[in-house]
Image (tube, rainbow, N blue to C red; front, side, top):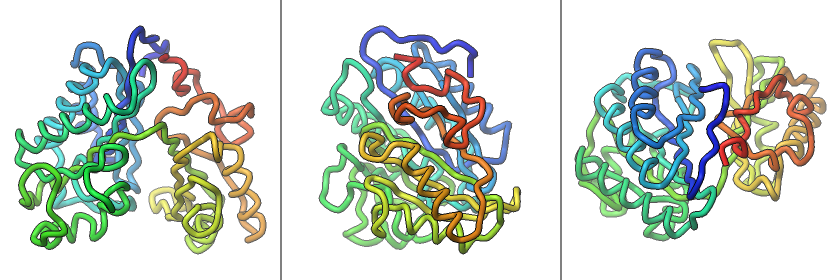
Length: 304
């Protein structure tokens, strides 16, 4: 990532592909190079985690440029990532697991939905892969979230594709064991925010996740799961903030700290995956939510 973030003129969209590779630096470097070689695209961040065995890239630029960058990345993934050897903490259905597009400036959701579906159709046609659309790009009820579309994960994908209910939205109902399937979406800004505990106690991390996530009665627009990072010997509360206007970073951080304290566990630090808008911090300093020395280029606003 460059030290100075280039500010865009004209319409700007983001694409935040999640790749099922978080350990092989040579592969990740090659994928990043493919994106950087695409004219008009800024690769703002690459975050890789060996325990989740997953990388999250952040592409920014004009819609057509970002679409081209996403397809260049897809080509690299098809050539280099093999799901037959993949094991990690994060749920997934394929090598290019999710490919979400996000409107940022001068562009509406309808245009981004059209962009997502063009990219999905191109992936389905070029590499004969099954593609499902989610978020605002979903074409069928019940397919609005990646969670719904990941049921059974990669290991259950072949059986799922063999059923009428598992038919993809684009591409063949064909199981490629190397590549799996792709979830292509259009959505609003999502903040991926993790809190590391000072303990390896998985039960505590899972209890905290239950307390903070919306689906089990916690905070609005928050998804959370508790995992153990074996390579570091600590537990983590891994979260997605789906709407930072409803639940900003400080609210969820303070809740995690409170729940951890109740369980007799401390908080070591936090982790931001990708970028976040300044508004997501609700006026608080990054250090107050466990993010020490956050560089300016990690603010989404720096590119707009």
